[in-house]
Amino acid sequence: RKKGGPSLQEVYALSMNTLRNLDVINALMEKTKLKLRNPPLRKKGHVVQVMVYDFLYNKRIEGGGLMKKAIESFKIELNAELTKFKVKAGVIDPEDLVPSEKKYVLGPRYVKVNTLKTSLDDVVKRLTNEGFAEIEKLDHNKFQPKTFAMDKDLPNLLVFSPLGEAELHQHELSKGGHIIMQDKASIMAAITLRPPTEAIVLDACAAPGMKTHTLAAEMKNTGTLIALDRDASRLKKLLELTSKFGVTNLKAKTMDFLDADPNSSDFKDVEYILLDPTCSGSGNVNSMELLLKSISLEQLYEQWQFKRLQKLQKEPERGVQLITKAPLSSEELKRLDSLSNSQENLIRHALKFPKLKRLVYSTCSIHEQENEQVVKKIIESQNDWILEKVWVDWPRRGHKNVFEQGDFCIRSDPQLDRTTGFFISSFVRRTDSNVETLATRSKDVLTINSK
Image (cartoon, rainbow, N blue to C red; front, side):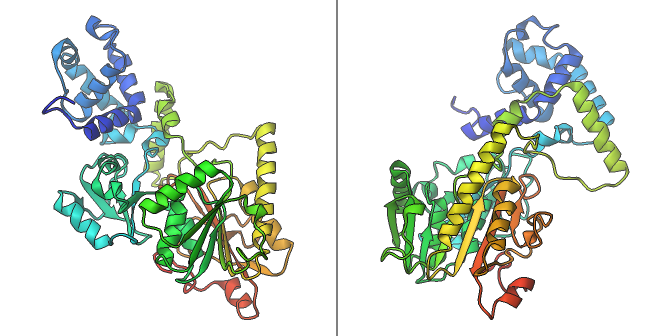
C-alpha cells in the first residue's frame, strides 16, 4: 500500500463490490464497446472493470494515466447506458441491478464477545473509543467501515457489514481472544443446549472448537466440558483455540464418539450432549463461486423484468436461491444415504448415556435426508425421548411435511436469515410432567434472546 493511498480494507471492499456488480459492469462495457474503442484498455484485464466500477459507483478513479483518461472520456456514454439499465429495471439505486444471487452472497460478519474474558459493554466502549460507530441497522449490501450493530436475536453478538469485519482480524481484541469471528447459526446450535452452571457437558464432535467455547461461556467455565474428536490434529487446534479464548473447564480426548462408553466412569454422569457431526455441508454458501459465475445481459434483462413485475404487483421479495437445489445425482444420493445412516447411529448412541437430560443435534445441511428424516426415524422408533420446540420466535421452522413435529426444529436460510444454512433439533428425556408441555411448547422454554 502506498503512503496516502487506500487502506487494505478499502481495496478489499472495492474488489468484492466490483465482483458483485461484475455482470452489470461487463454489460456496460459491451454496450459502449469501451475496450474495443480504446487501445490502452484492451490488454489490461480485470483492472479495467474495477476502475469502471469505481468511476460509476464511487464517482472517482484511484490512480491515473492513460487508463483513467480513456475511461473518463466515456463518462457520458457509460452513465447513459447505466441510466437505461435502471429505467429498464425500474430502479433508482444501481445496486438494485445486481443479480439476486449475487446481491445477497456477501452475508454480514458476526463477532461474538467472549464473556469469559470481557463484557459486551467493555468491547463496545473500546470500539467506539477507536472511532467505530454503533448504528441501529446495517445495510448488508454495502461496505460500511467502522460501523456495527447489535444482533437482534442473540446476546453478546455484534454484526458488521459484509466487508467490515476485515478491520478486526488484526485487532488486539481479536488477537487476545476477547472477540471471536463465528457464524450466528453455529452459535445458536450451542446455545440451544442451554447447559446450566456446574453441569457435565459433552461436545461429541467438537473440533475446531468454536461451539465448544460457546458452551464454556454458557457454563461460565464451571462444571465439566468434555470435548471429543477422532482427529488428533483437529483436537490440537481445538486446544489452542480454547486456551486462547480462556476456557478452563475443558477435558479434551482424541476419540471417536461411537467409542465412548456411556456407562464408563468418564461418561456415565454426562447430562447434556451437543452433536454436530460430519454432514454434506450443503448449507455453506460458496461466495466466490457465485460471484465468479457469469450472467449474460439477456439473463439480466429477464431478472429485471421479473423484479419490476413483482414491484408493480406489490409482491413481497421472495427468498433467493443462494444454494442450488438441482436434482441430486446418484452419487450424491448415495453419499447422503451414508451420511444420514451415520448421523442416525450417532444420535442413538448419544441417547444411551444414562444421565442425559438433553441432546441437541445440528447440521450445516439443507437436505431433509440429514435433518428432518433423521430426527423422524429417532422419534418414531423409541418412547424414552421426545422433541422440544426450540427458538419459538424463529420464523424458519423444520419441515412438517416430513413428520408432524418437524416444526419443533428450526432451519436458517442464507438470504433471509443472513447465516449459513443450518438445522437444529433438541431431544429431551420423556417424563410424566413434560409430555404435555413439550407437545405445546409455551414460550418460557426457549425464546430468542433468552435462556
